[in-house]
Length: 244
Image (cartoon, rainbow, N blue to C red):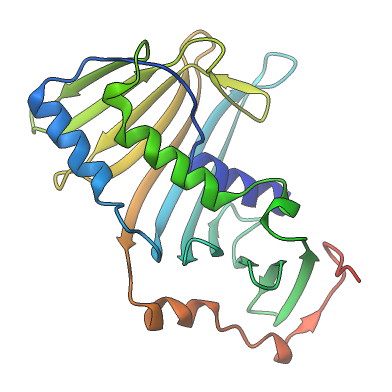
């Protein structure tokens, strides 16, 4: 469960899209869009807080929902740390992926315990978060020049933009065996992305990411503190398996 949660968090916040598009931008909406994406230019160290909410159908047609609330940290877009606040079964747990070591740690700071799983580089996880992030940002930055993808920008009474991106076969985003033909990206008053919602309008299923807080390009000395964990003082337990 915790390992799948890590994949969901990274894969769903840093979507990987391939498609061709038709743009509905005018000069003003495209300027706002470009400003929001260019905030990520030269990004290396990031941190923030995110809430994920889902409403999905199971195989029997019954509705179920899940939610996650966590703080996240990324160093040089290679090392990742996620501290869970919700749900209750994950509260207090930390996932720590160290690229240089090729290790994923599950840490309980309160009990001073940890488990680990060894990987042979990023590809050993079956997912490369850095590559996914770079491709997603490149897709967003060049979205106006990609033909046949429908994009509809809207602005509310407070001047806040939402961009509706309609995908078509075969490029519909599929995550956890669920198809999401539409993506809504909402901006805050500073034209930064504050919500990404994946929607299947036919079934009513959705997956929403609220970016409650974020900081880009934090000083290396500052971000390093979140990756200094005194594991030598903690007890190794058999959960994910320690490898050889």
